[in-house]
Length: 442
Image (cartoon, rainbow, N blue to C red):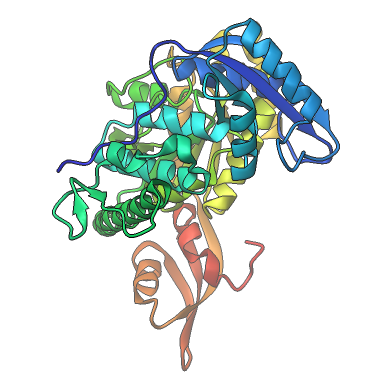
């Protein structure tokens, strides 16, 4: 039986009532107002209409309902007045929060949080089999601890393949004294294991592909940035491609790689990757591991920044935090200040370049500044060398060969378990040798 992705939010233009929470001393990149504005954009991307909003500032979260009981009753009244179909929280709700709120609001008004909303958007936009598998896994891992009686027979929605002993049509038969809820939980766990196995095969395939790509020594440039910063538009402009572009959050999810020729005539692979966002669900980062490894394995990152956005600096920080999380923060970066065509004073964008060590101001839409960008890419990939010293274990024979192939060895010493090499290498290979640097400040 073919598997099916869990059903996303209904597409019948449901009305959402937004709830923001500002918790004292909680680290946050955006203000409460700006975060709610972003949540509203996410809701609209998911096909929801905004019926209203409310917020509460708290010293600490309420252990039962996140917000205070008085605010819960206030929102219940407001939501009924505006005929809201669902309540959308800007914070991730714990399983207990969700159970308590569902009990209070009843069956007529659904409760979802920011994480569930983002997962739903990903489910809508994933176009490839790999993307669908990644989103389905993230959805199940989010839903499993939050499963309630209102979600019974969820396994029937998910399918899961028939023919297994003890199941009919992919749905497990109940054992003695076993509730439907327990059956659903068991089926979801089984489905999670199955999805992880399939994604591990995808990851292995990607690793083999990257190994072949490394042997060709063709540089890889990964475009990273906050969602809707203009990465796909830029790749289209540079490669004359036709990647789907829309003025909405997470318009494209699946990585796209295109060959681009630099001014000197040498080819480079440019890869467009999924956009980041503040409070990006950890389940998504884990599920998209194979895809995000495309970033961590790149020779150069182009950090595309929407310089016209009011929260551009906070978005830069959100991207940087995600790069640290996926261990890609040691790769050379060019900061691209995009959308200067939307500025009243484009020259002002160039003045902000001082804040970014390696940066270019462009308009991906009009093409302004893209030639300067390609010159900068070529300079880093082919013109910039760095003198380094490394101690490479003999089992890292590939890296030892790499140094000899692409660098200029000035001094080499062979020890019992490792080889010491000093010499020059192109900057684009620095990240691969970073763990073995003798001088970590390089």
